[in-house]
Length: 393
Image (cartoon, rainbow, N blue to C red; front, side):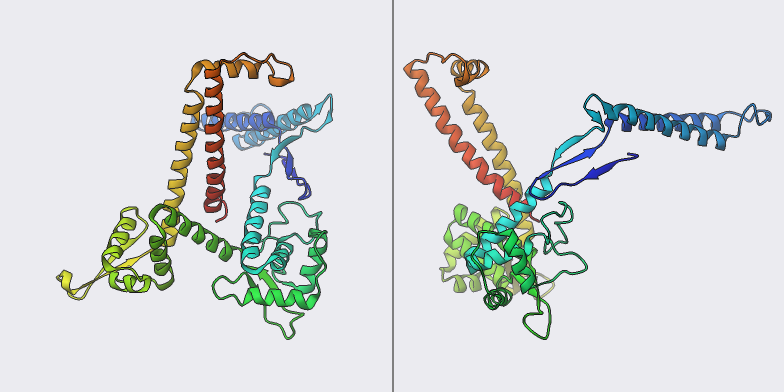
């Protein structure tokens, strides 16, 4: 929309407001559509005798005049709508979902580092992900894909800069010396399984820059969540098989049985159960063109991105089923539900009259509360899992 502006607040206030006059945008759209229809009608009409310039201007000039009039109408409506009893300017507020997702992502990364490297390393990672200045707008604090606050001009931060951010980002943290901080940062860079940090080449350790590997850490967290789901649904042996395939790549059934230290018969059952659930895939590598089973290798493999998509779909289905079950449990006894709705409409304990319930109705209310508490807690856990699989990609 013409004249649209946006003002961002500091990160400690996760709300944004924008001056977006909706009626003005609609009026401009209607005026533009009307002008286009009029232009089409003028082009469709047969040529008329030439008129004097003062009587009928050319079609191109008429278009410019109509667009100028539409722009004047838009400006007039903006000025009229912006001025009100509370003062000039219409302010519309909205929630900054990106800010909350960014904060949850930072907490998830720091929890992973805390479990793997300790609290000191987690505090350094949180300081690295913090913006350079607390007064930065929300969009400026996001940065690029790997390290949220790092800009394109300076993607790596030295140990002294990380400690400077740690002082204001975590005021209650214990003081940390620069050599100890550099040792923790180097240890996180040298992790072979999941390198938490990237380091730049420099002559001295004090000049070396560090950058958080956010994407790598999130992928490791998603894989750990996948292993937990497989272990819950198919057992610990199935989770071990999946971990071996993720580490070693495509393998035959006999090789999997030897590495997992499981009998071949049990391994076959586990593999086909996972294959039926679309967690594994089977690839045929034939030695000859006839594809004879005796001269064919059957390789089992796991495609982590595809399995994560499958897990995401299953999580959405479970969420829908839980919400339907919650609605069913709350609306099962209509008489008790009507009493509760009446009590809620009357104001509850703030001023409404407490309804009289029989012992049987009290038992029903207690059961409904118990079911609602269990289902809502399960919904919250699934929401966090879905956010990890969807919003943290």
